[in-house]
Image (tube, rainbow, N blue to C red; front, side):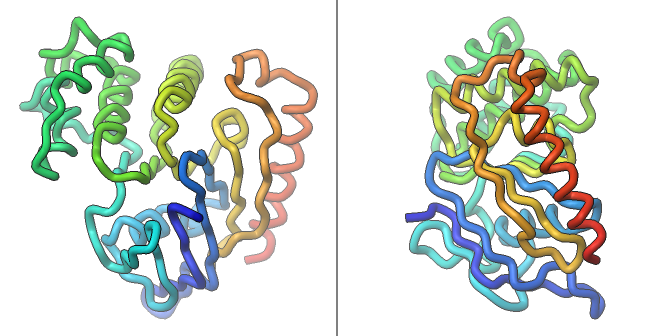
Length: 248
């Protein structure tokens, strides 16, 4: 059974169809990335799943529960870390739990240590680098009690080397805890490296153009990025994205 089921969803803004006839499902423990042309409705999908928007048509389920227009059903990490400057690292990572009336300080500290942030547990966001802030934000998302984590281009603002280090770190954490992740990115290489499945959206109105089931075994070493088969997959997804953009 799927953890997330998006069935025949449509959304219109100012008489412009942004999403139309969208079908998407994600199994529990699966890592799925969404690629698509700029402005194709990827972030709108997150807002629909997160309950910030209500679909004009169709249904969204988490398990058996209909969540159309309902907030609090997912753990969400935006493009920027969005840490509260007056809260320490520990206080920031516990925020999602606090909103649900729980607090697991022992587990939080353990995850902070595993992320290499042990010395910064009582530090404030202004004392952290960009990559460190992203780690804090992801730990916060992982500690939240919701079963689905939605990550909206979380590494887009980082430089190339920091981004790769964050991808490797995210994979190591994901392989340990196996949360269900829906990941939006513009980066084909990132989607391939991280995902079990890559979903390519059409241009507006967005719908699923094609799905790619990624064959590479886990754990995935950095050297995979230069592997010939990996580059062939990257090329195929690139051309699919180009076709998706032309179908607007």
